[in-house]
Image 1 (cartoon, rainbow, N blue to C red):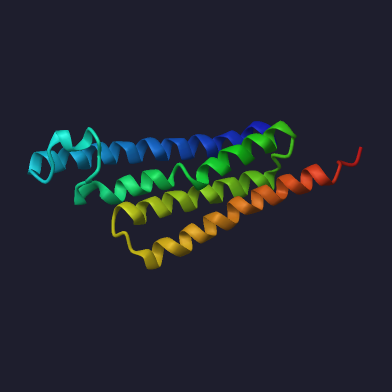
Image 2: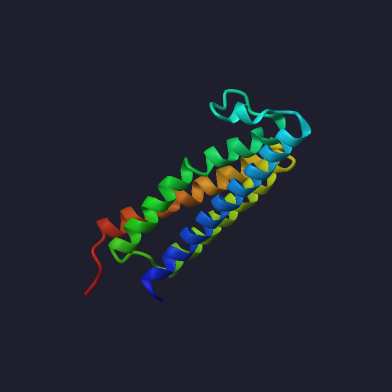
Length: 141
């Protein structure tokens, strides 16, 4: 397996972020058209319309834990630690973020969202453990 396979989950997560930006733009536009908000409200978004507030919060979430994901993926690539298992875990993390996003910007049910987040958190942590083990245990030559 090529080390570059670790980049595909990163690309997929970036695509998810772009999709959430698109949803946010559509929801904000709808809020303005329906009279819930004025375009000036977004100059300094101190008050977000109800139609888009969960989407904004989700977008913020996509810049928190995923930043650690990007770093660990790049680190695994840099030290030739992007194994098949690491790539599978990375894809599972991206899947959890996608499911978390779907719940967050639709029903926003915390009972569903929280366990999905926790699983993604654990998967991200597993990647960091794999990186640490790869650095601590030199490869057999």
